[in-house]
Image (cartoon, rainbow, N blue to C red; front, side, top):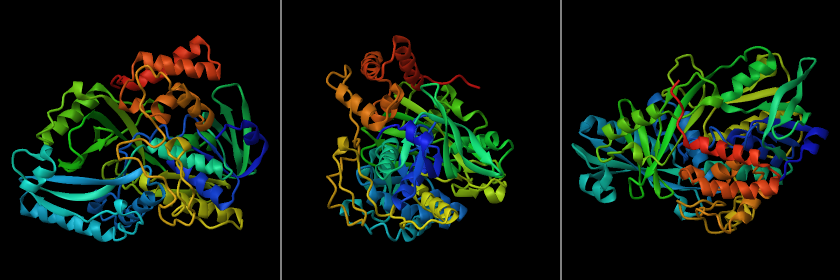
Length: 526
């Protein structure tokens, strides 16, 4: 996978996708598989923002049932099964416990009813060729059995726990990259660190975008019959700048933080209800991932981060509602913040706002033909959103293309992850290599502090996976950074390897190290 700026600037495409998060990646792959000519650009790195900074779950959205969003829950549960089928190297079953503390019979009965409906809506959870991927229904565990299953749920008034199943991603940023790689393998021209400055508009029609390479003075136009804006929390801001006026559809940004701490559970995740909300304790790579908060965010998306107050408040909240936690600031090994781009319903309530998506035809809504955008949605339903989007674009183009196959076409892992032969017909998992254990990284590795002998891995990230910065390698290609600061020496070693390959001078090398280290510092309070 190479950045081919010459082809981007010289060819005309059926579709230009602006935004390389999970939505843009899925659209590019779907369109390329159908036979459209596709260009995909991302101003930073693929899946570097919202698509990486989440709870790492592929889930049905149990809590959406309380808002009676049965359609969204059913869609999410169907898509959960599809992800398990097409990306088994990255998506695996995860048992959850919902502990109850002095809840009373009424609360227990309501939760049992909700979980029963969840089971009914996920009637196809066993329709998978691999028995290890099939999910059982929920069950009630009395106090004794629940404590045998997971001692950490003990506490005053503990009555027992409900057990149910959802699915977990080992690494959303790696899975998104594999989708981009498959799009490229199908003929899409993809490039990270290419920023769209303005849209090319002629006679009321968008014909692509004027873009800039972030690593040179190169500026050029990418021309396409249809342009899709899939920039997540930046979408309304980009469209307002590009169109010269506010777009017709509004976004509500919700900030969620996550904390990585030493392992708090054995192998179960916990869903803990608290004050009308909830939080997760998720087993992940030998640690626990705690998430998430949900607060309205009005600042610049590029400036989002975690403050010390964020960490202090979240730890206090967890300690108050999970008696065994007893977490301290020193337990926090890593933290991150992400922005959810929610469809603005006017309420200002980010927690209860729908996680539905919208596909917008700006020819109809803003009088600018050839321009679409997608807002809202969630990781789990990104494939379905891409299918809907490409259906609309194909209809607009009037082209005769192949059918959508992304619900069955297996996403090949990179060679470093064990490799897999493609199975467009979705004929089970017989062509796949054995998936890695749940807490491993397909295609990634753990660095030794000195990185001795790992230079070839870094070169592979650069040459084969379009890693252009040290942050690309540390935070996304290797996965080392999401476990905490790897230390000055490790960063120096990695930066030296990259500097030799990419021709960085000492000033550039130092700037690259500083950019990575910023990921491990909290932000000043606004």
